[in-house]
Amino acid sequence: HPRCFFRPEDDGPTETWPAIVASVTDLADVQTGAHRTWLARDGSDKAPIIPPRKAMGDLLGHAVRFGQASDVLAAGEGIETVLSVREVLPGLPAAAALSANHLAAILFPPTLRRLYILRDRGAAGDMTETVLTERAAAAGIDAVTLAPALGDFNNDLCDFGAEALQARLQDQLVAEDIARFASAED
Image (cartoon, rainbow, N blue to C red):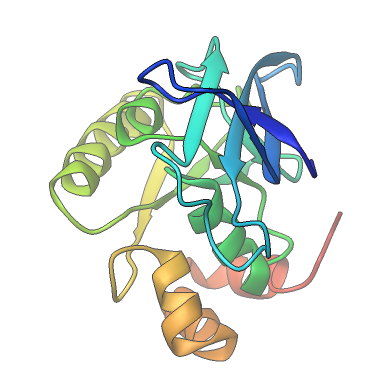
């Protein structure tokens, strides 16, 4: 959106900034919320405002979705992380839960048999990986963790490039999924 309203947390004046606006949906593809990431006016980075991201609505368990999940889904915290993975594995259905706590509580599609956890480095990523792995096992879902070299997959893509990120991810995927998700299905 070229001019999305931003109201500072300290009740300062409302401003407008370019923003990425994403729909948060439930498993039935019903919108439950919205997420905004404000951008610098030249589009080069996030806007120099605090906070540069805000979400509203019923978010817990839901996500910003990319592709249609059936038996396999990749789930991560942030939109940038998930889109970085989709950049090199365009056929892999994915969901951005918007925070570590929301990722730990993401709802599983009833047909899911494998969950790729797109973990971030750090304590929050450790907690999320543990909780999701336990929840998936209890639901009879195979959980496979995909770990970045740096803080998250967006850092990996920006610092190492698409070819290196694709190679890193393919080394971590279940063998039958490599060819399946390396090309766009949407």
